[in-house]
Length: 296
Image (cartoon, rainbow, N blue to C red):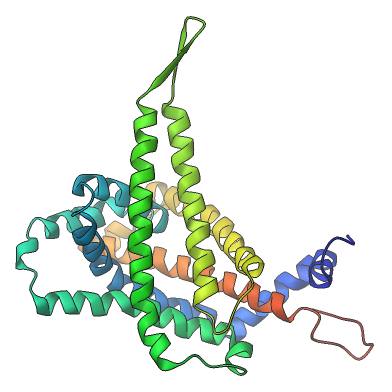
């Protein structure tokens, strides 16, 4: 393991101890409480953010194609409920003429709330950084709106690429008298696109939200950790909601809101847990016990 840096060597030698350190740090930082706050404000932000994105991008790309792309990749964030959210979004867009300046400014404000709360949650996770260096309040004020523009641009690229991959899926290849459909290849590429986009977005969150400059390698460690955990959790949620869940019996017409909030809270928990992994990784070897041996 000589090719690994000292911190990675320590973690490789004691992976379970490092995992326990991450969990203890997450509990000490009240990670579940922070995740609940992030999920609540994300629930307030997601619809106006999507409305603003589609209204702006529909001047460049067909609205139906945008909604189709949103429905596919919202399923990654809110399993089983993306169709309901996109249906409400499409219903609002058919009456976009009622959007006045007051409503527009209100939507822009609510779209930024989730990013503001997420930045505050990250400041708790990375408290050792905040104690050394604080971010100027103007940067914190502008950061959410820059991130909204960033996500809008990402949605534009994703829609264009997804449209091309769907077109590939309608084609077929003929070779030696046999015909093979490219539908399966297109589906696999669309999944890889979503997975790569998920890692890219999480990496950007870990690079931008914490105070100070974060190593790209460290951000990737947190992003890959959160992505793997979310992919496992997402499939479990899909199975649970389609087989065992009785949430519709209990909550009735509130089912969509409850399921979306639950999904967002789990996603926020894993997002902050990925940040905790980075935070603990940065401090590996800096806690020295009495015997002088570098420890977790």
